[in-house]
Length: 85
Image (tube, rainbow, N blue to C red; front, side, top):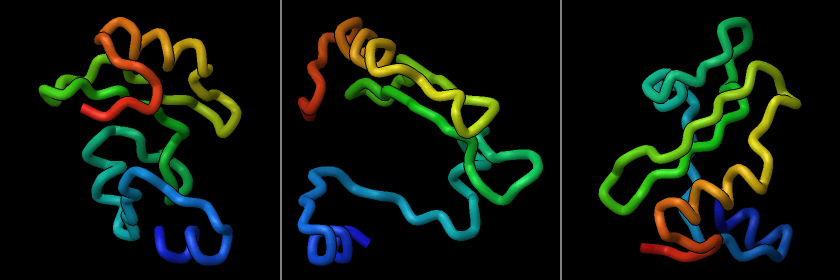
């Protein structure tokens, strides 16, 4: 998938993407849509030790975490946007 995005869209992605056709990961993280076979809009910020520091799961496609919320959660754990542990 990353190769397709890089080659066809000419965009380099610096992080792994997850393909979850059996929806096991969305079920494990508790973000499965109860009606449709998709994930609810979700954002998780996980610190280097593996602790979830921020979690937002929307009820609808337009119910999403704002950039300020996400950046604020990074600041709380001492990270910067785009920084990798």
